[in-house]
Image (cartoon, rainbow, N blue to C red):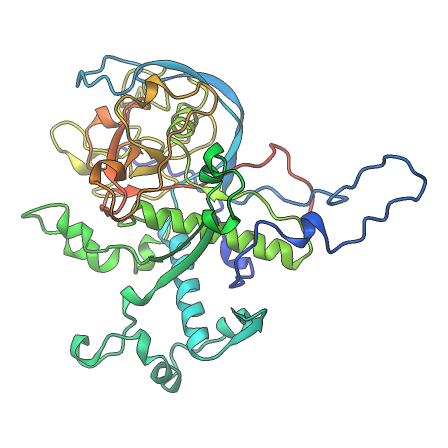
Length: 435
């Protein structure tokens, strides 16, 4: 068995950011008011700069994927003869992408932020502004979760007495709900919606965000996987492993929270808010996975899943099911194996990854050749067909076919699996300003 060539890097440490519990408004005073224009009174055109300096640093843990053109679709025979991915030349704008899948440690920051914010509101650690209560994050971060008196005040967050084991007070995961408010630009841009009130396009929703740890048991019938259910998300040994058991809706909520976290911090320092974190489109994901190798089957090239020494190049299901041969029985660290030419890890294998795109069999036939994308915000009442989201990359339990950069499949947006994770992208210039 060949050892996994871990290429350790500095993992993202978002915990150093100050978490503020308020939503960043799209139309803020920094756009149209609140600051003096300081225009010279000489009757000439001088323009008004929103900021004298660009201060956004390089996003930690992300790499820049430069703009380019590639042939999207299968680079080898369509063995399924499904014809859901016809080869097509498309162009992609540059963007920043997480070098690894989102890890348990990173998603745990999201969970703890929601936990602390809910607890702070229950304890009255709020500030009222314009009739809206905002969390006092300094007090929220100082909550003593080991203090018996504090826990008693937060009894509403705990399991009810009949659901406790040996009477132990534990947080009810279903109570960890993230509230988000976003502006639907896609819907607002439709000609039929011109002139309608802005409130018509504000989407407000509450999302339960704790991972479905029971997926490890549910996904595999007549298979013993209980240790992964009990330990994978909560044990420090798996801190840097990719988070799983997160559905598409939860992954989207994570991106919205990450945007809120960043922009709240920037605005508190009188700095310009930035673009939104989001899930990559299907085309962006494939372009990034290829790493500049437009016609290659895999992120590392053609045609093989092993290198010259016979070592496997990704975490998947080799042969007829020799799971541990690649060095990991289930998942492996998010930074395992060698990255592709863009510096992205595990774009093939380890966990399949959510994209923002709706899965439609004939989508390649009518998508634009510039940043192609098909999106649909499916409602709970929509038929299952409208809830299909594109999955890419293959996972630790998949055969080699699914590791190909051109292979596409789908899963329903409200479904959780022990082999599906995600990573984020953000639209920023390639060179960042100094702090």
